[in-house]
Each structure stands twice: as structure tokens, then as C-alpha cells.
Length: 131
Image (cartoon, rainbow, N blue to C red):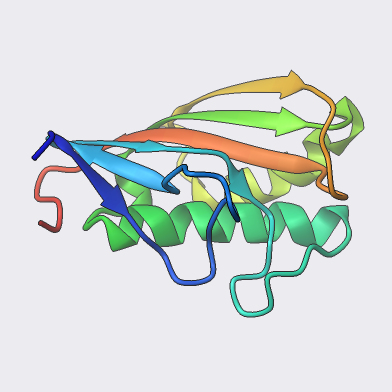
């Protein structure tokens, strides 16, 4: 058995792609692309709601692995348009309100498919992951 432990979250997947939503590698959590889909319906809404869902999904993934948002070390934000950065900042400040305790972040503009406007990818360090 390998060192990678897949993290599965109901309502989150990459469809038919053979990719886990996230993996634990020791105490390190690495996510794949985190979409802004509603975990209940699997639907994508408009840009504002997609951004809120993406952050909620990131939180759900880290909590499923046994951590919290305080364990997130770095976030990469992929945007279809840099004009959406304010929506990202709104959700960012809700999730990480303390200016002295935030992860690093890098925003990258890129084309997306299927109506997506935002994706997140993150790394976390979880002291006592769920095994």
C-alpha cells in the first residue's frame, strides 16, 4: 500500500477522471482542483455563488481530513477573469479574517470549461489527520 491516502467528500468529484479530490501524504494534505459546485446538487451557479461554494468545498475537504482552515498553508486560485478577484477576496476574508494568520495565495487567470469561473487548489499541514 502506498503512502497516499485519498480523501473522499460526498458531492465532490472529478467525474469520470481517475483523480482523487485530495490526498493525505503523511500529515500533508494536497487537493486537486476544488470546483465551485454545490455539494448537494452538483450544479454550478453564477460567479458569486461558485466562489462561495469553492471556499466551502475547500473547508469541507480539510475538515474531512481531520483538520481545519487554520491548517491551510497555501491556496492557488484559478480564475477565468481577474475581474472576479473581489469575489475571491470577499470569501477569503470570511474564511481567514485574521490578517496575521492567513495562508499564502496566488491567483492565476486561465480558460475553464463547463461554465466554471473559479477553482481552488490548496496544501495543508494536519497534525492529527483522520486515518
